[in-house]
Every structure is written in C-alpha cells, then in structure tokens.
Length: 125
Image 1 (cartoon, one colour):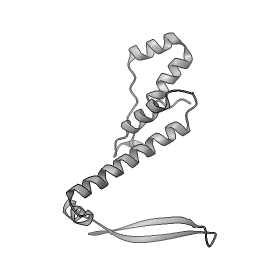
Image 2 (image 1 turned 90 degrees about the vertical axis):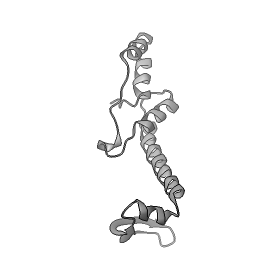
Image 3 (image 1 turned 60 degrees about the vertical axis):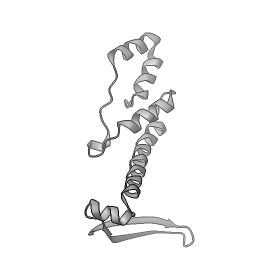
C-alpha cells in the first residue's frame, strides 16, 4: 500500500458549519493489492465498472444542464457519456459529425442542424 493525501470538505448540518480536513490515506499500490483490498477480481472489476459508469454520468450531466437548444436529450447524454476517455484533456474526445448528416439536417433548417450538432456533443456558444 502507498499513502496519498486528499482534501475533504463537507457541510455539517447539525453544527451549521463547513468542515475541511486533509487526510493521508493508504491505497493499493498494484493490481494484486487492489484485488486483495476489494476481496477478489470480480469485486475489483465491479468497482472499476462502477467508477467508469459514474465518470460517464458526470460527463453527460453538464451537457444536459447547459443545453441551449431543445433536442433529443437522450442522444445528447448518451453521446457525451460515450465520448469520455480518461487521460485525455478533460476526458473528452472531439465530436465527429458526418458531412451527410450535417447536409441532411441543414436542409431541414437551422433548428434541425443545431439539434444534430448538440446531440453529437458539439458545444454551441
């Protein structure tokens, strides 16, 4: 195990105050220690899958929160969530939209084009 330092802040509702502490935590140093910590490979894999799911949900949330055009929110969120890749700048990949899809949406008007771009995770400003 290795030590890592982490900050923790929370609001205590009983004392009506903000509490901030810095903790030194021991964490697994390698896969073997992680398997032991979680109680087996299946449980480690389950923990990793849960973390990936949470990261993808956290990626989709601001896309929905910041949407400026009414559209297919399901597709917007799905596209943003699946575009997340750890280790990349902000975890996001560049949005890709086919020229044919853009041309088809453009024929239907500006609203359809904007909806398509936003559904593909393009940030509209």
